[in-house]
Amino acid sequence: MRSPRNYRRPKMVVIGGGTGLPVILKSLHKKNADITAVVTVADDGGSSGAIRNYVNVVPPGDIRNVLVALSNLPELYLDIFQYRFNSDDSFLAGHAIGNLIIAALSEMRSGIFGAVQELSKMMQIDGHVYPASDDPLVLNAHFSDGTEIAGEAEITAAGKSIDRVWVTPADPTHAAPEAVDEVIAAIMDADTVVLGPGSLFTSILPNLMISNVGEAVRNTQADVTYVCNIMTQKGETEHFTDADHVRVLAKHLGGQFVNTVLVNTQPVPPNYLDRQKYDEYLVQVEHDFNGLRKLGCRVISDDFLSLHDRGVFHDGDKVAQELLNLACQPHD
Image (cartoon, rainbow, N blue to C red; front, top):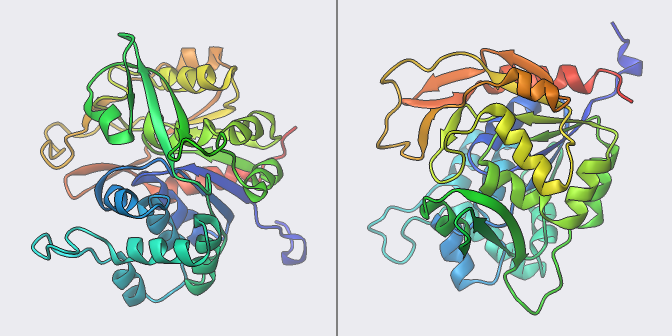
């Protein structure tokens, strides 16, 4: 065992968005990792989308959830930050208080990056939360039938097979999107870079399609780990195996770069999933371990399943422990 004097917290960069990311971050936070979260800014649905339509700011929803996951504030303060107004409150219907605070700070600090750093101090964040871009981005998709659509919500709702995605500035007069230097430095200095869990085309790839982020992930000496989704997702990954997920990542970045894949092998009990509440989930992702090994991936398979609220989730503590084990291993 290493002595406390020689102990160094493992540096972990977690890239993504959506509901799966905060689960992993909260568990890594409890295990004392040195965490940098890089969060997608191409969300255009729900409260985030409505705010984005009225205020020229990056959509704040995913950033809000990540801040809460890494905050050391008392639970009551976090509950207030997360509070969402009732649907019958017509003026504020559906908006989370945290989204409004982030939007206000973005105007006060002339951009989302400075706003999130300020809010990180206020919320006693242990680690770093970096928006993938300081500008709002639009996710674009080219489908296998040759058509194209712009907008994350529209892409998922199209119900077509996605061939590739890319991002463009929401303001067409702005230059091609780039991440700030802090994001790139964190990726290059990490022990482990974690992709996911999250929607492949709409939560993970929007970050990697920012040119300098994708380049940094390809070139970092860190172990790049993909936390594979448990379920296939309607309008995104229908009929996908775990190896198919990695192939799509490689295709988008011009070559295979994923070193390790975490795969859940525990079956979801029949008829457990609430199909109305979680209507985007289809069936469990099929395993293609031979395909993953041919891609040069180390496979870590285990029971990573957490069942609650009639939904299917990753067990954050188990995933976090595996990620910490990887971060503490020597790598080339």
